[in-house]
Image (cartoon, rainbow, N blue to C red):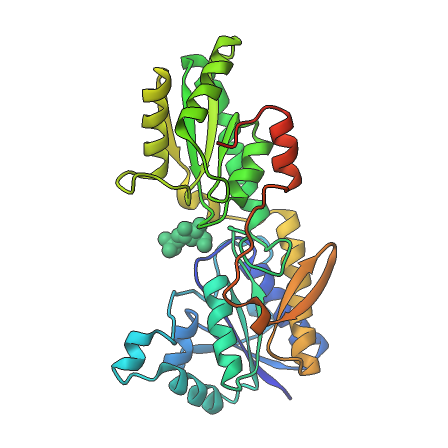
Length: 337
Ligand code: F6P
């Protein structure tokens, strides 16, 4: 019987539990494996903090936010630890051997994919699953969590319209995304944003001000500005605060800011994310069963495929100016900076 481990690492996102369920139910019930749940990401492998996952523990997970395994931002390959003689990777490899794990399924974002790739280079058997609301993992069209985060952000933008209209204000909303503008682009377009600022497209605050004044002169008494957290600022103020204050300075129109924050990461996944998580989880179990290690599952088109982790690591999936939503948005008069 194959005994495998599973861990979740990095920031959480909606759909992780659905993935755990997808991996484990297939592994246990279809492939006859035993699955060891590792607590708190790589931290759990360092401390051998684990539990056996049974069918009972896997029920009721589809719509549950967070991760039943817990997560951490533990990075075992941190140079500081190695330089101090604390060889975490070697401890983890030894612990995996002691726990009798033939392989570990790692569910995580870019940092996790990088760590997973390093373990693969050491000869460790890993299959990984991409997970992030930011959608910035290279090689997959979408990661689960993103669709849910976009829906939450879109709902927030929808709600800002009425209060912006009542007070004839500019409303600036800052959404997550790390260095990528995917959440801002998708929620900004779905929520009818008038200005969308993302890290991938340089902006000129004067042009943003002109766009808002132009709207004002046309009788549009309020504007909605959606900004990604990774957009450049003066380095002293938060993105939303900076953009809001600069717009007020440029236009003379009262501006207010909203930082949506962790609400984007919490709660139940959308049905799209649940199904994506289930498919990715099932394919991860399939790779494990076939002994195809060192790979990350991914969605390309409507197909789940897998890629070598060596190809994925260190790359980012960023918005490009020729993305259809940017092209169509510009044609409609939306200002991208
Ligand atoms: O990776 C998801 C994300 O939500 C980013 O958008 C954000 O910058 C980051 O995590 C913040 O997470 P934490 O505070 O947990 O490090």
